[in-house]
Image (tube, rainbow, N blue to C red; front, side):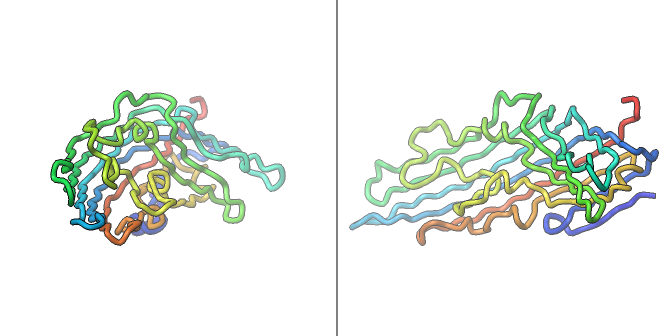
Length: 263
């Protein structure tokens, strides 16, 4: 029999399903995490020029991020105890191998209100290149809640290196002047502080009973964007002359597969 909890996507605790297996006192799991993300942001700003017509800045940017990760160390859960509990030392898994990717599309235009010769535009697609396939900076949190006798699972940013290697602007050197950013495609983009890719990719915590881990051959979680990770839809603009709209989503599948005692 398959155990399952269900929830509305991206707003509450994600679903998980568990397949029955051999009961183990100290189960060990291989860990795999796959998923993808998409974002799109449109921006329009009309900054004033003293004594003249306003400038017009527009942007229509989007991005995609993908990941397919395995965590070589795997996850082992010791037998828990009421005193000197070894389970309290478990924090999850970190350091992944696999593939991550990121690309962005930039479409910017500046129309100068005073000097036509300063009009400029930039349109390009940028891509992360040279992303490593080993020792990737990714982490899955797994910590025990002794009060409920459950393990709390939280997935974090899966593609940090890919986004770091993604160019922030077109090669065109005129882009980025006159109060327009190099891009507006970052996952979780907002002018308000506290948002961004780390918050965007942090999943809702999922509580899975200890007994489920010790009697399952596979546990699978379907994860997605949370209400806390989603930035203000209007990007929280800094000035009254700015208008912005951002949208997007992400989904991921996190799989724990039980290893045989000899593996």
